[in-house]
Image (tube, rainbow, N blue to C red; front, side, top):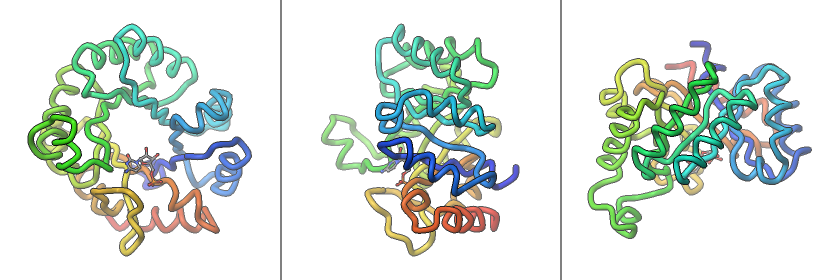
Length: 232
Ligand code: C5P
């Protein structure tokens, strides 16, 4: 796959001019954007329509954790916007994962990704919420649940990508946020990895946010990530 198509830039902005400025700086080089709860809530779905309208793919990171009926409705709304990926929390269980997959069937380009364990969480955080075992075992358990429910893939930290590829097989999407360039500040990511390592381990896509969107020159920063990834 063309390296540019593997990099998803997270537009974590609280206003449209800021998000649009990043898109304009990246021009035609970035194909895929992530729109998360901040931008969607602050700016609205019109921004997703703008991205789809200019030919970009959109990962709508809704992180759905609701009753199945509401999850299905949100997935249909995402499909109607023309997005390519939407996320649902696998900790919500088989009912909501299945509802999401069923709802996506009407939209041939829409893929349902299960969120396993957010990359900021550590083993100690899992203990705090009453989950025994390591983040890795929890990620694998939830990925298995998502696979059985028919999800098209998962999002997961770069450190779990290799074992997830084994569990999920070759066709599944594995989208890895929390990637950083070698030597960069890791922000709040508890389990970071480089784009190169994530793709070499089997990630289909990587997500990068602030390291590109808050860089003095977003296009140069994007190109650095693409160069790192291309080395794989
Ligand atoms: O840190 P960065 O700005 O590159 O984050 C990009 C995306 O990765 C965010 O939109 C967020 O959804 C995801 N992320 C995550 N866990 C973190 C930090 C970010 O899943 N600890």
